[in-house]
Image 1: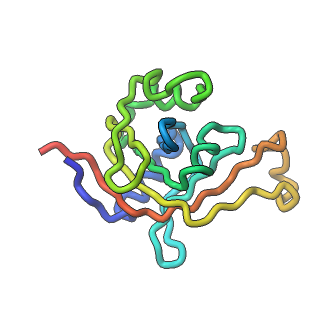
Image 2: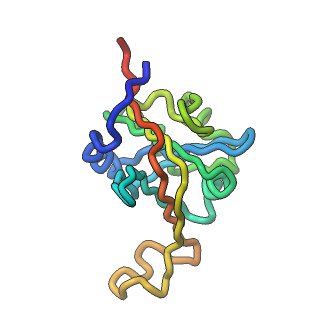
Image 3: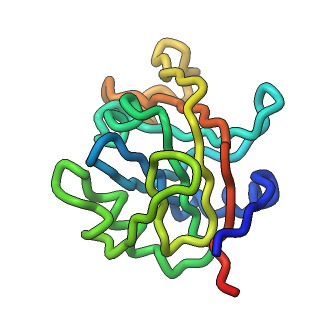
Length: 170
């Protein structure tokens, strides 16, 4: 059963889980993907609940997001999916189906055309309303070269949260 939640209700848990990773999911046509992210979070921007995610331009997820403009974020609230998170962080869709490789079950989102990870408890479904790229010329000196050692920079996606829920068994 999917229980609707206030998207801000779990913002602290999302922030804590980012240290071990959470799943970013997207689909375009018959291609779907999940990847592990460690940057992002739930925010209020323009009086709207947003989920902000960061994706490098070299990632297959970037290609899917650029074409679909929808994504979901699936957050495991415990550590049972840490092996799957590690797998999804180390493999690419270009190598094969990561849901299958990580032994995860993709399920359709409730509101948007993007999958969720069925094994995770918490889900945010988002529509991209703004995106920006990191500008290497604007980095402060102390962090230049520490996170981006090439020209493969992150795009920042601002996703308006259109649905948020927790999977709950009754």
